[in-house]
Image (cartoon, rainbow, N blue to C red; front, side, top):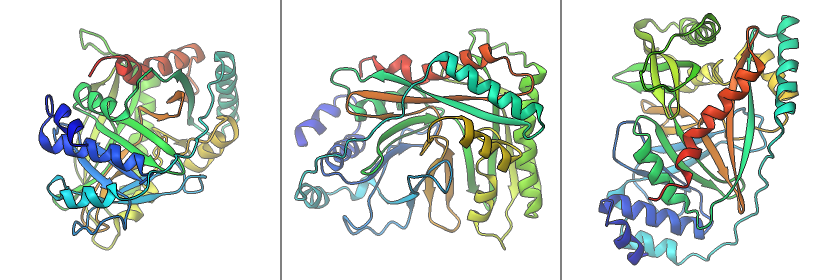
Length: 370
């Protein structure tokens, strides 16, 4: 472990090297953990399975699935600050036995024809006026590159996408996941609720000149209306908005609107969270009917894809992101998760192309050297 930390220090600071080395050790021991970095920050954080070591930090890392009734469960990890990663803690973990990791079955990729067929299923639901919009996602399977190192890829994501929430987490029953999400779900800051509407997608262009058609604007409005309705129903006053405006993330651009609402001291943050998630950007509208459509036609369990993760202390600290631009790492393959919003004006061929474009966020750097 010390030798690896020295090698990492050729490029990274001692704190980062210590966290990456410890995460590798935790994986060997089959202990749940998450490495993560917040947008526009250089600091890497680590949270680990509770009960392994005694920690004073009350901050927890929550990892939640797309839906509460998913086969995978919400998990809470204990944050461990880099200053607390001592030789004693490393020795405690190192003394634990190595564990043969459970073989995790990845969801399988389907053909283009099957995906287009599923879009038609969605469009039928829309024509029948059962839903206004729903997200249809799919899986892209690629062969895991020889010598693939998840920790090193995590660092590459941090370098490549400074504006995203980058994470690498391992849960023994669910395997190894990684992602670089552009989408804030909820943050409490200065006694205010912060959130964003992020919807509509175009390929990124060098001129940064984006013209959004009505279908894309409508897709964004769906998310805006949902967010505004949730906070209004909970007596939270709108303090400010910014947007919609174009932002770039990876190989795509989106429409984004930033919101700040007043906090309602009579509410627990979980009440807002449960109503806010899943937003129409990852589910659809009406929420209940769209989720039923996804369950009926999407063809695979999302598990942690389009769930959320981030820090909380159960009170005044909440900083959570949607688990997008993510992948699940198997023994021989990697499953990438991508999707798009299907509405009445959707062009199936364009929807297919959008998923390909979104997949490039991860695909374009998988084979790049560290």
